Image (tube, rainbow, N blue to C red; front, side, top):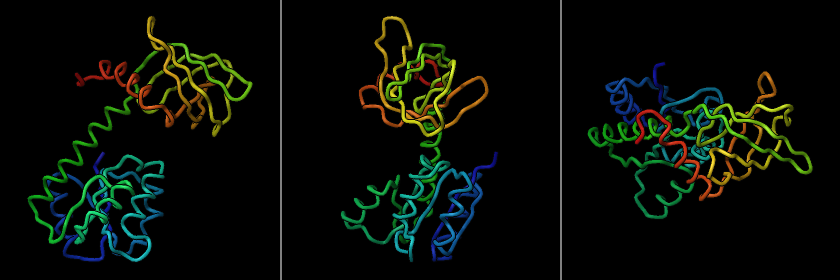
Length: 229
């Protein structure tokens, strides 16, 4: 599938330069000069990278970044904020909104090219991080007084697909205990049922693992992912 970038900036010259650099590395561009058009597009499509000008009429670059981080398709998409404001407070506010990188004006072509390559390396890392690995292990799910004893179908660092005799409804918050291997204490944390599929299979998003549990899950899965040492 062809990679696609989203560019939102009122300056045509900046947009044209970004488009040319993206084209040179095989990435198509969708360019908007009005930021008000961006939220709907972000809800409907997946992008390999996004470039947002910091200073725009509502929503501005940081606000669009926050919307991406709250979205379904682009939550982990690298975001580059384009700015002429190098004050530490401006940079801090951009990163707090969820920006991945900053690009300062006037835009330098070579620096832009290096930045685009960095965003795609970030994407590759993310693809590995979210890759589903077939793992069969016991998984205990609980919601209040209700408990379901199931078996994992596949596991990633973001979630687990569980097959069970019955299922919790989509949107249910659940406590999760994954017994991934003998001799390893269960990985425990909170998650949410995000989808249901045939045979009482529940897709659980593990968005609320403590850092230590997330690290343990990573240590278990990374050796199982092809190309990761």
